[in-house]
Amino acid sequence: MSKSVRVRVDGRELSLSNVDKQMYGGFSKGEVIDYYTRIAPALLPHLADRPLTVKRYPDGVDGKFFFEKNAPSHTPDWVRTARLPVPGSTKDREEIDYVVVDGLPSLVWLANLAALELHVPQWQVGPRGGQRGTDLLVFDLDPGAPADITSCREVALLLREVLTEDNLAAYPKTSGQKGMQVSVPIRPVAAGRTSEYARAVAERLEREHPTLVVAKMAKPLRHGKVFLDWSQNNPAKTTVCVYSLRATSVPSVSTPVTWDEVAGNRPLTFTATDVLDRVERDGDLHAATLDADGLLPRTH
Image 1 (cartoon, rainbow, N blue to C red):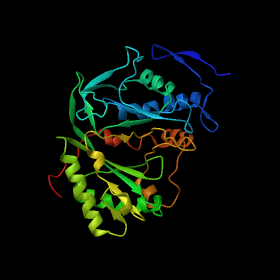
Image 2 (tube, rainbow, N blue to C red):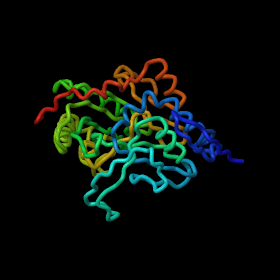
Image 3 (cartoon, one colour):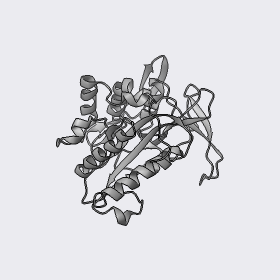
Image 4 (cartoon, rainbow, N blue to C red):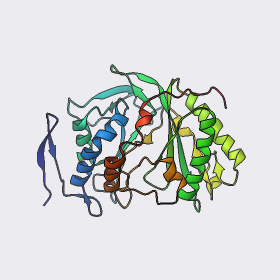
């Protein structure tokens, strides 16, 4: 029989439902909530002030899912939301009330909704709402079979060399699925600047390594190559947040890794348990992305 329990989280009363329901094989919703509770000290700073898009799996990863941007009608009044314009919405909405996670209670509330995946934009909202400048540059490395994570590692190292030339510090993480992402903290810039720069970098690497890198989005071009997706920097797009669970066959996590790990040959697949152990041992390897100090070049 499924259990529902009432808990108190940082002074907030929450009712957790169906905690025994299996989200993954052998990993219940209660364990999802436990993971997000324990990883919260590392995760919450990366969610702070970022309007959230979640991917919900009410019946687990083998069931149906849906993306959710708009805060549900039953959202508690203590959960922070930010009303933002969504021009061109396919649902004829001019504005959306996004959830903005500002503490552990909000995170646990989302986990109880089976919001397994947490996706964030590369910009923040201010305390009174409104979109701030872009403070993260991100590259998504997506391998086209038979290319794999080994190819992604090679491209990530090449990418790091280019970014270093431009005096930008880069921080790698796994996607939690088959690819990787590289994040670069920058001083806030106007929307569009990061897309322009990221596209120039991706196209340079495509020219220099045509058998390994592709910068164009067309899927037929990706066979055996790594698609260096620069379009994630569009202000309307989101990227899976570091430490987010992913909806795979096991509770895998988008995990920060060191450049030594990228250059090595050990597997780059980590479960929730692995990540909790890594953070306890190494701290937050992505903490430096919270310091927006890189100066984005105007051209490349």
